[in-house]
Image (cartoon, rainbow, N blue to C red):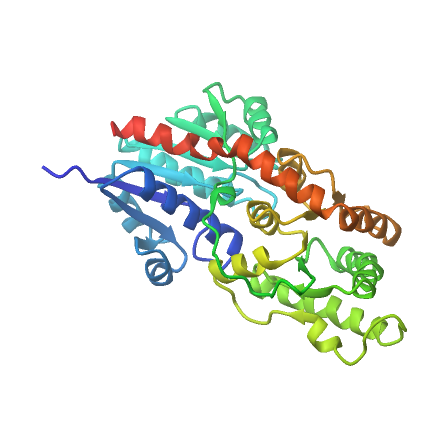
Length: 373
């Protein structure tokens, strides 16, 4: 009789979002490290690519007939990572992920929530569904205290474990993109809300980025979600170059080399290589900040969502500005503070991760217990 356990992974996978792909990569890595003889099937928007990237089985997340069959033949469903239970991006998100959980519960399969970020959840029916479904889950682990608090407010009575985002435990590459003599700041910006918000974001950042060029730094823009992030990165880079051309303190001959937008879809490893090589990361994308922290690279957050603010609280770093109220003066002031205290933050990140890193493994320990391993 085979001792192999069949595990199905559900999440926002196969959409070319590096943050969510890094979550998937990290969960798969930890499962394989901690549990021998497991067979993993990922529900993906792009099954062929997911199979090729991670060496797992994968089926189309929209093919409900195949999803039902796969879950029925499995031992466990993991609803994994990311901000799955929220109704800000779409009113269909919560019903979809809870429907997957309900299928597993119908067939009496074990279900574990793996380091999820919960919320915002504004709709009454979303809250009602979460309360009904999540109270029957076998293991609930969230990535921050705000997610735990929200589930309790909604009416989840089961024990809720506070883990960490699995990407904080990601295996880091040894090679680096830049040489040690380079001073490079990584910038991970995304569009958000509307044109007015994005214009204010660009206007607020440019003087600070000019300041970094004056200090001898290079700027490198990384589009974490290539199709979404590339345009705004190019717009900011173009504006910075135009202003830099009139600045006497900046080397004009090397502007193209010193202000770089990575114009290609990057793999997880490529993003990690870039991130680990930076002196400082300015990030809107949550997982740009998480990858930086995992690499002990100092961070400054531009928070467009509570999940960003909560992560900065988790790592006990105060350099976090709200994008809604962002302005040139506030960004410049905070940037100078961060730039002047990089080494102190680097040491702090090293210490804080030593203290908290064990929490990354809380979900997998529960999974092993439920599987009898």
